[in-house]
Each structure stands twice: as C-alpha cells, then as structure tokens.
Image (cartoon, rainbow, N blue to C red; front, side, top):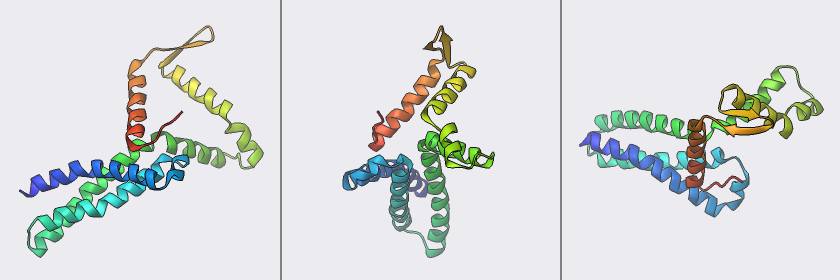
Length: 169
C-alpha cells in the first residue's frame, strides 16, 4: 500500500506543478515576461509540501516509519523537481552560462559584452552549431532541416512550455 501512495504522489507532483504554474501566470500575468523557469520553480516548490504531506499523513504509519517515509519521499520528489526544472531550463540556462563564460574569458566591459552577446552573434553561433551537428545543411544560403529528430525534440519543449502556460513567438 505504501508503494502505491508513493507512486501516486510521484504521478501527481508534475500535474500539481503544472496546475500551480498556470495559476501563478493567471494571478501574476507580469510573470509571462520573465524567464519561464522562475515561475515553474516556484510552482514546483509550492507543490512539494502539499504532495509530501498527503503521502505522509495518509500512510497511517508509526512516527518512526513516517519519518523514514518523509525522508524517502522528499528525496524522490526532490529528484522529480530537479528533472522537471532541468527540462524547462535547457535553453534559458545555456544563455546565462554562455554569458558567464564570456566574462570569465576576459570580456568584461559592457560594450565588449554587447558586441559578443548580441542577437546577430547568437544567431550565427546557433546556426554554426546546428550545421556542425548536421541538423541543418546550407544549400546556397538557404537552410534545410536534415535531422528531424532535433525538430521533434524542439517541439517537445515548445509543447511543454505551452502546457505550462508560456507561449514563445
């Protein structure tokens, strides 16, 4: 019976996180103009104690058993939260990590950073990377998608964002 409750909690946690994420966007529409992972992380943190308490309270265990169940389910839900947040943060974090890499590499002034971290440079860098990975090919200045698995992977993240209430243009 315990395993069934734990499994149910793990199944309900992402669903509750998604519901809370959308609720945050309804209550605070200004959050749509901020990075998505901030809202999602708040929702994941808010869902955490609710799901955790339901599992522990409904277990009907002794205090000692409930304590170990609390530790175990906390670890499981924490791992689930990290996976969900990581899935959402794939591109958002990458941009910030690149900026930190530039600063650590010696580009420290704002004009230098603007020159290296502008939209044109980022677009060129991403296109070079997609060409190198053979996701795209350049046919006389026109790009063509070669590896459709990358497209479907990107679609997953686009749909995941839409499920959470974010719509990228």
